[in-house]
Structure formats: C-alpha cells, structure tokens
Image (cartoon, one colour):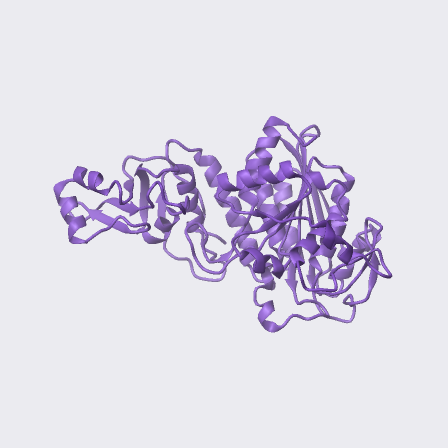
Length: 467
C-alpha cells in the first residue's frame, strides 16, 4: 500500500545535499565554485529554513542541493526539517554531505516524508531516494520507517476494507512471521471466555467482535505487554455521533495500529524481550443487538460497569483487555487508544497525553520522547476525580455525570482494571495529521511508538524492570 521505505547504500555518485543556516552562509558560499556562487546570487537564495537551491553543473545537470535550516541557537529547532527534501527534490539518489546536525533524525524524517498511501490510486513515479549516512544505523532507521508505514496504512484504510476481520488478519500475519503463539477469540467466544465488555460493544456489528492475543520471545526476557484499542469504526452506538464527527472514525482503531507498529519495530529489531500483544477488535454499530445506555455488564475483572454513554466504548473494550494483561503481571504494560476528544481540546492533535502511576516511568517516557522527536505530555491521574466514576447501582460507570476532564477520567476508569499502575502507562493518541509537515504527511499517523521502541529496547538490553 505505502511507498516502500528504506535507506540505500552510500554512493559517491549520489547528489550531495548541504545544510546551511544564515550564520554560516557567507563562509559556505565563499567555498562554492564561482559559477555556483553566481547562480545562488542570481536566484537570490537566502538560507532560511526549508529554502531549497538546486545547483546545476556546466552541462545543466543537478550538481548539488543546498537546503536552509534554523540557526543552532534557534528556540524551536525541528529535527525533522529535512523531511521537506523528500517531497521537494526531483527523483534521484541523494546523500548528506555538509550537515545536518542530527543525521539520524534527518534521515528518518526523509523516509517518513516519502510515505504515500496508494492503495486506491494509480502508482506515481518514484520520488527521491537517500543514501544511509555513514554515521547512523541505517538498518534501524529503515526498520522504524517501514513499521510506521505499516501502521499508517492500517489507519488510512477505510472501514469497508479495514473492518474487524482485516485488522485481526493484519495482527495475526505479523505474529506468524515471528512464530508467535497466537489466540483468536471470535464471535460468541469472547462472552464464553469472559470478555463481556468486548462482546457487548461489538455484538451489534455485521463483523463479529474478536480479541487477538499473541506472545513471542524468550521466557526470561523483559515482559512487555501492549494493548491497543481496535474499534474499526465508531458510530457512537445508540448515542449516535453527528455525521461530521464520523468522518474520521476509520481511525478509531489507531491504538491497535500503534500497537502493531511498535510490535513490528521490536520484533524486526530482535529486541530480547517477552512480548505480548492484546487487541480487542470491534465495530461500534447500531442494530437491534447493540448495547444500550443504562445496561450493566460484569467485566472480566469482576467489576460491574454501567453504560452511561455508548460512545465511550473504547474504554470498555480496553478494560477487559487490560484485565487480561494484568493477570500475567508484566514488567511493563502500555495501552494505546484514540480515546477522547478532551485530549485534543487540552493538547491538540500533535501532543498526546499519557498517564502513569510512576514518576520514574513518566520521566523515562518524557526523556525518550525528546530524544526520538516523538512528543507526549504527562497529565495527572487526579484522585479527586475518581469518585465521579463510582456507580449508584454498579461498581463503576463508564462516564462521569459532567463534561469536564474527560481524558483524565477515562484514564482513571482504565486504571481500575490495571493491577499495578506503577508499571503501566496509558496513551490517549489522535493518530491523524490534519496537514503535511516534515516527517508527518497528512493522514493516518503512528504516535508514541518510536519513543517506546527506544525505551523498551533500552530496558530489555539493560534488563531493568521497575522495582
């Protein structure tokens, strides 16, 4: 579906790219051949961020590329600025020669920007390609980019072709490629095997509710469990969404896509860990069997849950999945979900909030987020709001009676189904780019996977689970 991502072997014949800023422009220009310097002056080139100069040789062929970047002391430096090259350069093979400041981030941004979702359109001519810079791990960067493309493809595919069956097949295909032990719990089986909330949410759809569970890796490795919300389309259920709010609901399985993208990075990278992936996969549809406001269901954990709103279905399927995950007592438990509009109101689409009971884990997540240019922001599990989830005729309700702090109360709801909040983090992701930015093309987006790849790999290698 996506444009194949990957860095190529370094070649002297590739067209060089020089990164320059306003501070170093005069010295750089002085070193250019006279003809190239005159050409830059004739084009009135200024080395401002994202400005591009294609310098020809005497025969008129492309000799080198000059690309403007921020000054070193700029307050808002974008490590992914080089991604603009992937959509601006003519086809051909290129290599970095002078700069950039962070070759790894620039090379990754280039690959991430090359992504195009092409399942439903005619193939377009191949764009520019990039040599792996000598100072970076090109295989790792290519692996990350291809895993992101995999996740983006899942999100971008409309629900007519990415329903519960197709999403489960994508997960099982990944599991089989890595000889994982797999389980598919399908149809009425989620009810029979004590996943009543998964069954309740998905029973109104044409494609049956299901849960995918796969495990691989050494028994003595770091135990990491990933849980992703796989709601392939969300109508809101009987609490029906307005049509405008349904336009992007094909991306409501973004949490599952993040999970599979991260799992692909870890498995393809051979990270020494015991990885478990749990995906509750449903479609929240409207039909006679649909679950109703006011219904009460006994969850896998044993807590009775009253349905205050059928459009708060993601936390319900996650509740059963998290309860299953907790039974295995993993060293780290991460869940991902396109869960609340409140998170977007608070932090916007580019900055996913996360929640954890551990200050140590929160700091580690934040540090890796900065290093990977994969932004997140911690929001609190504010204890005073937890009582708002207490039911009057049930143990818990799935929404509070007020409209405030929706992302926080959703996280507090999930916490009730987690055995050890100090080893858990919940990510309320958006998984969509409303416009194109360097490294982040418009459409489906895989958020937080890259930072967690770094974190989990570091933990697995150092074998240092939380005490």
